[in-house]
Image (spheres, rainbow, N blue to C red):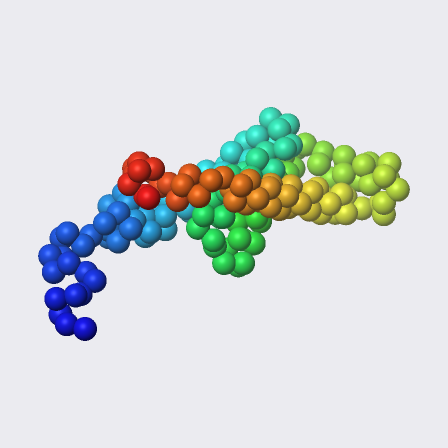
Length: 169
């Protein structure tokens, strides 16, 4: 093989494509490092505010969005687990703590719910079960988001913001 058959062009500027652009330029694989934590925090805040408005299903919706994004980016198991905790039990736990500090009878209501459900007469049991429900919602939403993302045609899965579908083929 001679140097004339090199795979990369000799002009370094021409070799930069949208996939190899430096991080922070709006394109390329490194840009999601800044966007992903911001989106995760925005999702957690949305779930917390929604739980305050009695929108109990928002952890599922946040998990659906996270699953679709995770199917594309494929985070490791530790990041996926941290995201599931951040989108489900953490916002609900924060909301319960804020309500308890404001004087709501969170523990009293949980104690009554435990007695009505035939569980041990402890508020902690119902609060832990509530947080587990949020975690299960995020996990189910994430699974469905990944499954639905993989049902998309290949050309739509490879599409990135800022690039047309024709450019990705």
